[in-house]
Each structure stands twice: as C-alpha cells, then as structure tokens.
Image (cartoon, rainbow, N blue to C red; front, side, top):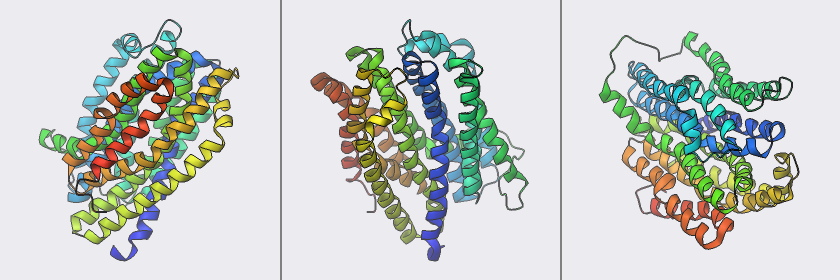
Length: 424
C-alpha cells in the first residue's frame, strides 16, 4: 500500500468529490426549481427547512462513517448489521416527527404566515422519506470502504440527476410546487440505492447482514467514531438556523431568501471538502490499522493541499461571477435581493480557506481512532464558536457582520486545532 498511496488518494478522493457534489445537488436543485417555480417565499421556506435536512443527512453519515471506520479497522462481520439496527431506531423518530410535528417544527424554525404552508409541506415529505436518506448514506459509506468508490460515486450522481429531472417534471409540467420538489428529493436516494445494491451480488463484497442481536456497546462505538461527520453536517444546519433568526430580525424574509441563495451554493462547495475527507477516511483507517504512519502523514498532506487549492479557485470564481450566480435564483430580478446575495457570496465564501482544513482535520482524528478530538473540533466549528460570533458580529455590523462571522469562527477553530497533535 505504501508504494501506491498517491494513486489510492486520487482514486478514492476524485470519486468521492464527484459523488458528494451530486449528493449536495439534492437541495441545490430544489433551490433552483423552487426559486423559479414558487418564488422568494418558497426559497425562504426551503432555507428554513435545511437544518432538518442537515440533521437527517448528518445522522446517516454518522452511522455510515462510524460503522465503515470500525469495519475498515476490524473487518468485523457484525458491524454492518449493528449499524442498520441503529439506523432503524433513528428512522422511526424522524418519520414520527414527519407525521405528527411538521407544523410545530415549521413554527420553531421561524416560518411566518407567508412561508408556513410551504415549510410544513417540505418538512413532512423529507422526514417521511428519511429512512431512504439514512439507508443511502449507510450503504454508500460501506460500499466505498469495501473497494467500491466508483460505484458509490455512480449511485450519488445518478440519484442527483434523477432529482433534477423529477424536480423539473413535478414543479413545472405537473405544477406541484413545493410538494413536488420535496417528493423529487425524497425519491432520489431510492434510485441511488438501486444502483448501490449491485455491490451485494459481487464476489469481493465483504459486508452483509448477519443474524445477531443489537449490541449497544457497538452502537455506542459507531456513534463515537461517526460523531465528527454528524457534527460537521449539523454545523451547517445550526449555522443556517442561527443566521435565519438573525437575518429575519435584521432584514426579514427577503434577507433569508438572499442567504438561501448564498448558503445553498456554499453547501455544494462544502460537499467537495466532505468528499475529500470521506475519500481519505478508508485509506487512513486501513493505514492506521496496519501501523503505516508515513502513509497517514502523506494522506493528510495531500488532503490539506487539495482543500487549499480548491478554496482558492472557488473563491476567485465566486468573486468574479457573483452577480450571474445570484441572478440564476432571482426569478423576479429583485435588485435588493440580488445586491444582498452578491455581497454575501463575496464575503461568506472567504470561510472556505479555513472550513476545508477543519473538516479534513476532524475526519483525520476520527479515522485514526481519536473520536474525542474529532468530536471536540467538530463541536467547536458547529456550535461553540459560531453562535456567539454570529450574534456579536451581527450586532456590531449588521448584515456585513453576518456574512463575516463564519470566516472568523472557522479561523478561530483552525487556530485551536493547530495547538493539538495534528501531524503537519
């Protein structure tokens, strides 16, 4: 493995970046079609629901990444089944919330009379389809770890493309609006799973369902190893929730719509960093299990350099093309909405220079069996630092402070991580 570590890095990371971009386009596609088919109120409602989607997606990644990491290190035949038990428990809670609590959650997330119906509708469908989202993330992680990065990529990309096609059909020709966009997003992971299921029939498949009872010790271990992935995803939801509250107070629904444009594009870029981290995870875990310290350092170095390079390119493009990027989601060509979104893109995207590094460092700690450090770093990013920074900076500088706060908080967390034992 030492002789071809760079080739493995390229193979796994390239496949995962493409796949994660595809997966992140679930919400981006909804953003585009809702902006064009429903308008600013629908866009605001979608942005209010993203924290719930992030929680579902993050829970699936926690179970998948935690289980796949332990499977990579130990090759235990029961890990996949134990992860599936845990998944069923989580899915039951999400579905119950979708059936009984969509209206309550819509109000809790800040929906007003103009956006309440849209928000509750989208939440109901997404939560009821949560078992599919969770299962898709679980199988993706295990297929990738089990030597199938390209199949995992194919599943994610085909699922995303199907979401785009279904979004168009349900929102425009069938005139189903917000409901159609939500159904399209819910069906996409089912299509992805159909692609991924072929792995179970391959000779080299090493994970499968086995007869065993739930072991809470194993479930706790999966949570421990996968918590960094959960917190990374939840952090996006927490940031969105906090920013929605602040922006509603500062500029109302129009400001939330502008933030929706910025953050949904940002989620696609963040998915690239997540793709890098998920790509190196199985190789890091295998190298750690074999005691290959040089390979671990090389993988971390490759990941950091790639993240920095992507940050530079993305920021340059977003700065130059901020106006046309904002106009794509501005159906009514509202000049105030456009102005806020353009300013937001140019300031908010500076956070990527630190966010990519923090995501990769957190997954490094998880992959080398240091879940406490991974959890701490992810908590600092997602909750502990960003919330007070956002409130303080918005109070001092209004919307400019809102746009700047993520960059400041990511820089603080990166500075803290450099005082640890990260080997670079």
